[in-house]
Image 1 (cartoon, rainbow, N blue to C red):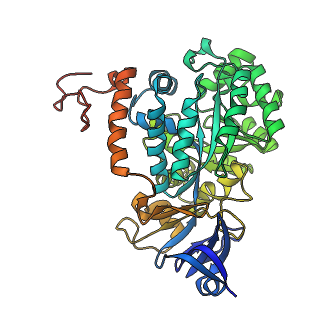
Image 2: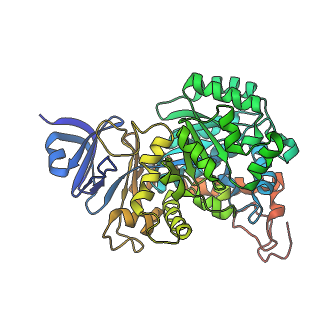
Length: 477
């Protein structure tokens, strides 16, 4: 007797990303509830299962969902503001004041728009790193948007209580003990089967030594992931040396901060000693190639870190320092950047890049047992890549084509926990045209309220009804 299942995706080539990196031509996957129950040749799966709904993937490729291990969804309404500013000037001028001024509705819209783009680029899980904020309504608004979209998420609570003398924005300062108490309450309120949680100290010199120790203890007590920006540029080590007489990574090793549950973000300015310490403590890494290039901070030593045995994952970073949430674009940029850095086209393969966004990313967020590959018993998180596009065709190797010849329009279906959330190019439960119009107006309203329009060139203009900049650019803002 055949098993009754909720969903079957049949006829496509299944790129499993299992331990053998098995690729099944004319394959199928069967889903019951939120889990995969069968993965194999289409005739075998159909022989064992009868589905309430079957999606025909003939001629397409079925991939595990991509996992974005670092973003700031509240930044989506800030795309393009402060272009050309150095990292910390940009934070002080754009992201910090915008976050303080953002309403709950604006936070919701920003996360909803970023989440729609994530789904359209085959992303099924995002780690959202919220900044340290005295008010917690933005956490709720981001969680609400992700819940409506059906995206799987790791919600990170930001922390900052130190670093005024380094120019860090006081508007983000909040006592660590108070923030942890708030987090206890919010975790109970926001928890769902699709949501897990992380501690997110923003930068090492932005949290006091006592605060870092308290966060380590909390993570140990609750078995919680810790994620933090580390060595994004040279100023990080310089600030730590000024405060403690040691560079960032050795100092944090000395206070017992590092561990296999820590996901370090960026890691551009890594010394050999830093990589050795990370390898010793099994620290994971989130590589953000597009953001690193946009802010001009440098090229992360991904090859050296991977050769040292580190788990390196991929991420977009926030849309304010990337200008998109497109993980397909991130795949290509990651591959090209490492080929450039290594001075060889063989410096990294497309298969290794895909690993960084799937199995390695699942390991980086501590969920390798349930995410990252298409195998029975794992969560049904996947997307269908349709190569019938001018950019993608012809296809010889589906992995190479996904990494180097795909775009958001190549992703026709995205499934999260067994639910079809991008269905034949339509995002479920979202009036996308209406959302885009409202986000345009909301973004301009926020920018005018904060004053970030002053950072735009005089020639800038938009099509929105609330735009007050003349189309001819004759008057500045």
